[in-house]
Image 1: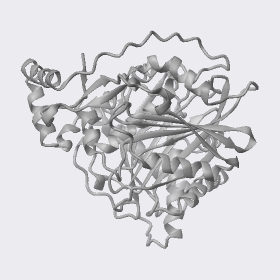
Image 2 (image 1 turned 30 degrees about the horizontal axis):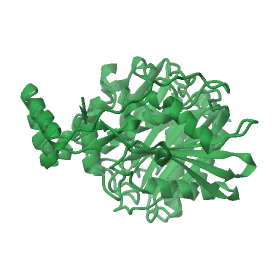
Image 3 (image 1 turned 90 degrees about the vertical axis):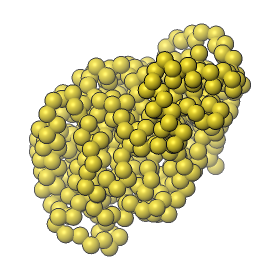
Length: 475
């Protein structure tokens, strides 16, 4: 029986354009085990684990005439070698070459005639390292019941857990008559399907994603209400088809040190760091600035533990965690780093008090613990889905901050050294900032429009500098 795409997932397909591919990405940098690691090992690992993510062997089929939302069907010609690919840098490949490859791969839309995901093994990195780049359409991930491949290929130990996937026999792909019959039957059994079908035929994507916050995991209902337009910013421009990607590497201990000295939560420190970096970036561009100048951020996935720290657990789950959604005006006009963090802490505290009942603005611990495996890719996707449901004029920049495990994880014995999220851009948004804590580090992935932000590498360095400035200010 074919499963129909939800209104939310169907809308992401409908809204997708060449300039705004709706795919979440991840860059993993790994150190091979003594026995080595090659393409065949990655393929074998994916083949062993893919039964845990059955959607990865399904593709989207449109209903003839477009009278209803598309359906998921088994890909009878599924070819693992099409999805798991191999690339290499001229040895010894440097990080700049790797990030350029990431930007090019994530700029391209996925093939709609096949399951909507790709994974690349990148060989030739300096110091004997290799990388894995993944990209998955947001229609496939972003909910508790829709894990990503990144959640299932990693283990807590070097010894890979034994998995025995069941023999997969794809169901016959439905023909046009069967698809039409299924659509009509659904309309008769569930009248609400008629409304959804009318919206789909009209491509009323805005109406179709109006319930996106609930679909993303009980994030703040306040985000669905109209808000005043965001302040003018060079971060909001008509974007191109191409991207630039840069990273920043920081230490979790530094965020904890600032939090211990100033109170609040680690996420306040994260937002203060991004604020400081954006301030320096805007000044370097010659932007006019006053003490009251702000940049509005959408921070839909700021995940904290109960003690206010950045949440983190093993590859098996994320206990005692909460996820919040909110708009926040980052005080980029404030020159004093301590004043910036105080203003941000006050603003986040105000969001908590205004939200009222916790159920209105939290993704609860029970939700997060059901995200079994290595969950950051799915949580970043949840944040990107919230951004995709909002008017592009309502915020300047998207920031997703989600936890990773605080001990090493492994893929077929290869230890992951670093991981960087690649969060997609929405229409007229020139920058998205994703960050994940992992094994004592906090790793930023900056995805930017290639034409609007040729200086994205400078912004990455300014993030590291802004954290150093805060650490020095509290000593």
